[in-house]
Every structure is written in structure tokens, then in C-alpha cells.
Image (cartoon, rainbow, N blue to C red; front, side, top):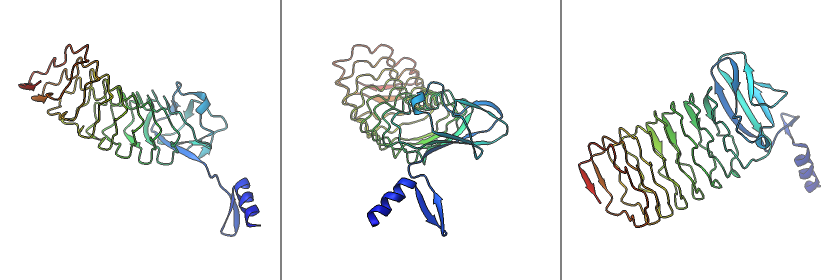
Length: 287
């Protein structure tokens, strides 16, 4: 009898609350957006695969009858909920070029099966807040361009990210020009092969890469290109025996005064032109 009761509850998704049977959703996955303006606005990207469109879209508490890319918003400070009833495995381009979104909260989003987050928030030029606290990246293979060109983001806490399966991280933070704080202290880069342009265009004074394992990296060109406030880099743990490209790796870092690259194995590098171009303060270079 107990076994049958469990099956019935699972089938009908009902529970008894305050002596009343209530319908509930057991497998909901939700992303909440904030848009601060009226007019026709994109709530997710036109580049996003329609196969993974949400099952429901709620705008200011009202369920929309049709799930589509853009909606005509009639008020200021809009709250939009995107709801999936099943797990998805692809977040590629989910919000790319959604220039009107100012906040994204993924704390209730089930990403345990997601394998791609490349370009997920790329070109979200108004985005100021991003909650990735519970974002599960343990299955992600491609993370390239995930935050590219988000010029209003000032901080990113990615300390909970499991990147042990990630292969590509190129352009990950490219041109996030307002980023003042970034926590990548738990990044596992053991499998990463591509790091080109990863930190290019940042205004940070230092970047903690002490945990980076670059033993499988093949591409590091433009990795720190155009970081005008960068004053120090500790790359003593970098393994570069498999790297093919390091051209313009440190170019246009005018405040960088010293670099110790004595541990760099460049035996397989085929391109290293312009590697220190524009490093006008570099007075101590150990090769």
C-alpha cells in the first residue's frame, strides 16, 4: 500500500499542505532576469538553440501564452522568469547580445548536465549583476567567451566552479573592462588546451594564477594583451612545453615592471612575435 501511495504522489505531483492538496512541480529549473526599461526587449538570445527554449516565461508574475525571444514590456523594472521542466545540457549563447538585461540570477537553475556555456553571457553590455552561486559546471567542456564583452560587470565570484572537464577557456573574460574583482582560485585547468585572449582587456592590477595547470595548453597568444593596469604576474607554475603560440601574450601592459619566465619551455612555440610589445615599463625580464 505504501509503495502504491508513493507512485501516486509521484504521478500526480500533489502534496498535502494545511489540509489542502496542492499541485507542485518537482523538477522546475528557473532563471530570473531583471530588465529596467519599457519596449521590445530580448529575454534570451536569438542565437540560442530553439530545442532548449524554456517551457514557460513569466513576466512580472504573468505567464506568457507563447515562448519567444522578445517581448513588449510595458513598465519599468521588469522581473522575468524563464522556467524549464526538464534538465538541459546546452547553455551556449543563451543570453548573448541581450543588451537590455541588467541582472541574471541562476541560483535556482539546474545545470548539472550542461556541457556548453560558451558565449552564454557574451555582449550583455548592460549586465551589472550575475548570481552563479549554485551553477554546476562539473560537466562543462566549452567555456570560451562565456563573459566576453560584459563592460558593466564589476565582480565575478567563480570560486564554486568545477572546471575539471573544461577544454576551452579562450576569451573567457575578454574585454570585461570594469571587472575589479575576480575569484578563480579553485579553477582546475588540467584539461584546458586553449587560453588565448583569456584575460585580455581587463583593468586588474594582479591576477592570481597560482592554481593554474597549463600542462595541456597549446595556445596562449594575447592571453594578457591590453591589461593597462597590470603590475605583476606570477607564472612560476606555468608549464609551457606543449604551447605553440605565445605571440602578443603580454603586449600593451605598460605598468608591468618585471616578468620571470625562466621556467618557460618554448621548444614547441612557433609564433612569439610581439610578445612584449608595448610593455614600456618592463625593466626586469628573466628568460
